[in-house]
Amino acid sequence: MFRVGTVYVFRVPEDEELVSYLTSFARERGVRAGLVTGIGALKSCVLGFYDRERQEYERIGVDEEVELVSLTGNVSLREGEPFVHVHAVVGRRDGSTVSGHLFEARVFVAEVAVLELPGEVELRRERYGGLWLWEPGPPAHR
Image 1 (cartoon, helix red, strand yellow):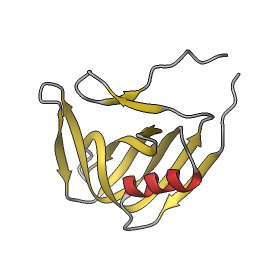
Image 2 (cartoon, rainbow, N blue to C red):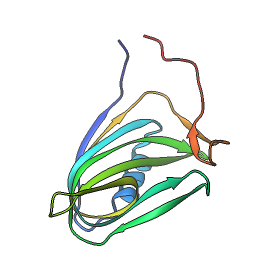
Image 3 (cartoon, rainbow, N blue to C red):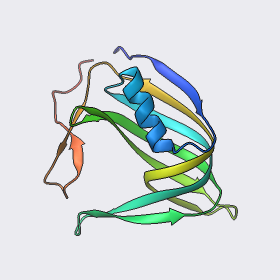
């Protein structure tokens, strides 16, 4: 058994940029570690696929209304500030999906839950393709 922090459940207002909104939310409430999940609908979004050889993201623009089938990710600290890292699966009208790292999204409606975890998780730029990754720490106690 372990202790978890506060669970925030909220709706993101229409026309907000989702990643910026979540980052501001974490900063305003002092969330230093957490898990993010959500569903909804978007007016447009930009996803990404990480190219390990080039060590950069290939951006995938989705300039149409889509269902936000799944939003999942975390909140960590990057250079002392809250950093929201989320991935998304979005569904098109024909039922096909597009997925990847979520850079930005214009919200039609989004219902989100943020589970704040005790303590903090710091990100460090690693040799693994130049990615920002969680600082290794001791295993969690049960």
